[in-house]
Amino acid sequence: MNLFNFTLAGDNIAVELLGQYIDLHNNFDFVEIVSRDDEVSFKWRRLEGHWVATSLPQFFTISVVGVDYYEVRGKPSDSLDEVGFFTAETLGDIDYNGRTAPVDSSDILIFRFVGGAEIAIRGQSAVASLAPFDVPSRERLMTPLK
Image (cartoon, rainbow, N blue to C red; front, top):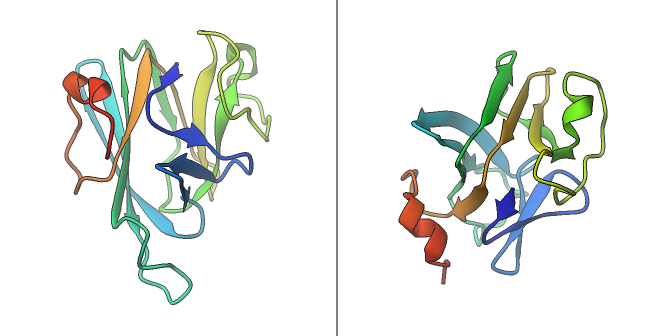
């Protein structure tokens, strides 16, 4: 999977986008999954706690297009526990500290949530968006954020 305009942070709880560290574990609540055709979007909303910098974006979305594998195990809580890439062979096993980038095209992106739920997905490309919960179209993959 090609991460188009963001990277996963080395601590497995955040992404880096436009030079900004976006901590999805401590500073954002997971809100919903939107799926249509071969595109799946994962949406977060910034928390309003005193520890959360108001300079962080209010909304954050990761959309994966060209999805050829997608599975939700359990009911995701609003708190992300870990995100990373894992080999397809480890699917369903407890294997923490995923890699920040796929090694090959069969690697699966896994979101783990507090409470044990997991979302596993593999696709062609993933793109991040700061827009208020719009689902990016395929054309957005060719238009970098400014």
